[in-house]
Image 1: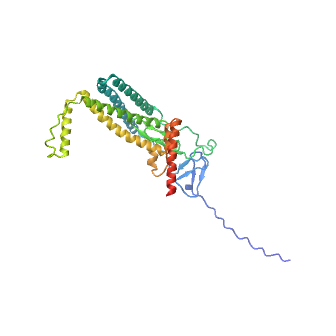
Image 2: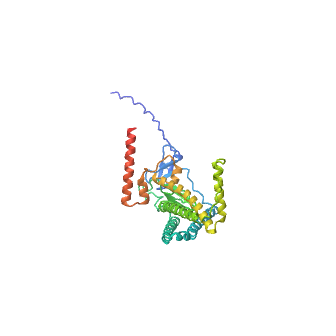
Image 3: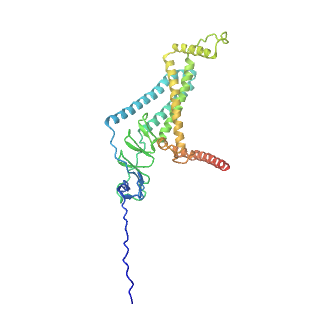
Length: 352
């Protein structure tokens, strides 16, 4: 029996693929070694869920001059705002109360009561927005795999200023030198950030300022009208045909401005308070409408700037209900109204 000829085994060429070092990274959250098929500047850990940027380096702390300048800026704006509120309250009471009490004692007492309530509400909300913490992130374990459980750091990023984990929708404030949860913006007029803990107090403060300025403007205009010197208008009946409407308006404005020179100190204070209240009311009303629009969209100002085309939540009145913590009867009415609007929008889209 002839044994079959044994053929030599073919050499099998073995290819060993080496992974470049650029495709290997270390998760800052749990410390696990991550390997990627291709290079990516941003990656997410499959265990703890932390998001890491490969080119992220630690940042140097701000200079002493920069920190002092921001601190002085905030203190200056806070001082100016407090002095303005005290001037509006004290000056308004001093200038308006004699005129209101001259109408009737009931009107005077009513005016003083409303002024005291609005002043107390405005100052209280301002103090809460200024001195209450904006919302510091909670301390969470990180850096070692045994300590970090699965999905403990879901969508967390690393703050290079604080050298600590930063939760989603949190931003680092260089003025406050801390990360703020759901940070909307840093307001120098309150010397504090507007975040998750004091955002609702800040919006309440804006609402109280709008109501207070509207009331102050109405009372000062009424008091100014009562003590305004008599105005001698020129005889425009004979020259009405020869003069244009613009010239007639200028003659009236000139006559009113000329009578303003005879105003007393109380009258000048009333005129200034009227213009100041109207100006502040217009600016704060725009800021309040902007804040309410972001709350309605379930967004914040900084997130709106960072990703203008992305929605961070479902739009609707339920966001405002959740934000203010409305009582059950009010929230039930608002949510029912928002559900009716959604049904109408869905029906309209189906018809299209």
